[in-house]
Length: 267
Image 1 (tube, rainbow, N blue to C red):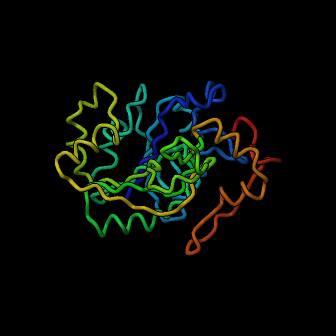
Image 2 (cartoon, one colour):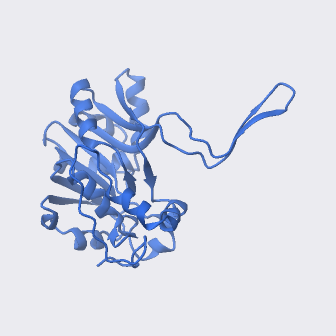
């Protein structure tokens, strides 16, 4: 099975850092964010990758090259500009189709404690066209309240955990998804996966399966999440970045930085 890593975005929410480097290459503890994403995938035995790149694509390719440094194979799908999640899948179709009937799609800007091995087994068991990974761990950035009929606040929850399944941007898709993407003319416009393609599938009563688990995740594509990670104690950051499930071998943690966020440019 191949994994398509989405790394084409401009990272506008991380400016001014991303005025000089692509979002997946922002440094975290001496490595680019994208390398931490890759290491977690490798720990689940995935060896074939396609990276969807566009903005400052050469920086990503110059760092990862063909993947042999990590014992994996990496190919690149290029575009002049980001095309949306479904559009990037369409661009990369020649690389990912026929590599086992289904493929994994992973965001290149998210640190996730998702168990990819369990997700793959789930998809194989259900044999659907689409499986979406959901986490029940999502802390709201605003407060919630209970207000009675007399408009009196009876309870208040400051930045509470939502407790409902939230998509973390990871999917397993069968090759049969391509005709549904093609309907939206992806060669000429941006096409989104959850915004365009998934509603069309539901309208035709095509099952979309949800893999729901309580795993932690961090969207580093947002400047507040990136800064929050920088402020965490070193031991906490180490645990977040090198975390592995109990049934997987832990990765060796190496860092050339003195704090949780390394130098601006990777080695």
